[in-house]
Image (cartoon, rainbow, N blue to C red):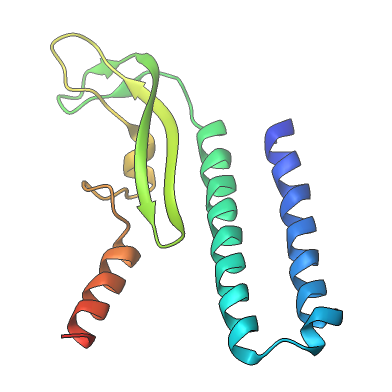
Length: 138
């Protein structure tokens, strides 16, 4: 685990402790249910985004840079890290993953396959939620 992921874990734990203090502390004694629900929803979304970032950081750090088999079963060497945008239910994430390329062959992103990343940049959960909301509000 890198020092970056270790720092994120410590910060996430501190943020979670703040959430517990928020719902049990002095301000909770005067908050309305609506105020608490709205505030918690925003904070949980932020926490979810940071947890998803930690998940992706962990997966990217574990990636191998050893040559990969391309579509035509030819060994394709590591070329570079390439960024991708991903819109999750928690918000937009940008992360870099290993790109394997050799001239004359299509590029390969093994992590995209391992994560079952959709071809479009929107998460399946986000798309399902949007469809549900569109149908319910029609």
